[in-house]
Amino acid sequence: LKLTNETMDCIRKVATPFIEVNPEEEILDTGHLQPIASNILMKILYMARVARYDLLKPVTYLASRITKWSRACDRRLHRLISYLHHHIDFRQIAYVGDPADSIRLALFVDASFSADLQDSKSTGGAFLYLIGPSTFVPIMWMCKKQGQISHSSTESEIISLDAALRMEGDSRSLIL
Figure 1 (tube, rainbow, N blue to C red):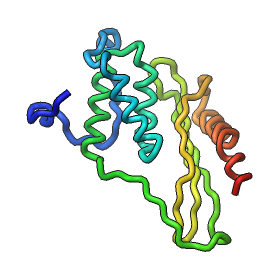
Figure 2 (figure 1 turned 45 degrees about the horizontal axis):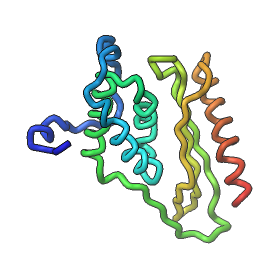
Figure 3 (figure 1 turned 180 degrees about the vertical axis):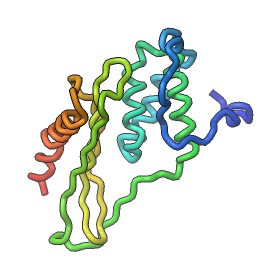
Figure 4 (figure 1 turned 90 degrees about the vertical axis):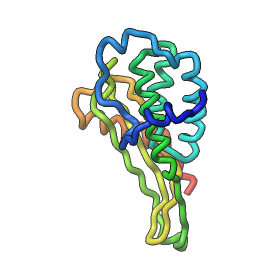
């Protein structure tokens, strides 16, 4: 794929990498980008796992659709590329300026409620970092689709908290 002036014109500035709702007919039609989608997504996933955790959700969603790629996926990938193009300056920053006794471990967890239109499952996310008056060091982040359908937003939040503590929170706390 070559970027020309014509292709650059269709990369408009977007605030988020997500598209709200896709028309039903787009879900059934095979997308044009299916042959190259996995190559593009894996390059973005490599960057996301290292320093751009804001990309984890859209990339993992699209990666799970590789075998069922549709025109809706084409639109989502286009939106993701537009987001990347206009937010290339987003970077992960860490700094330490405090003694060890004034630094603490913090874990933030959040979850969506039945956000996936295909199966009504929630997605949970977590962010573990060191924080102090002059310290901010990200240690871990995760974005994971939940295995069951939640009956309330509170339930999806609790499932996300449990996953974060089991997978990352406890093991990291023991190291520190």
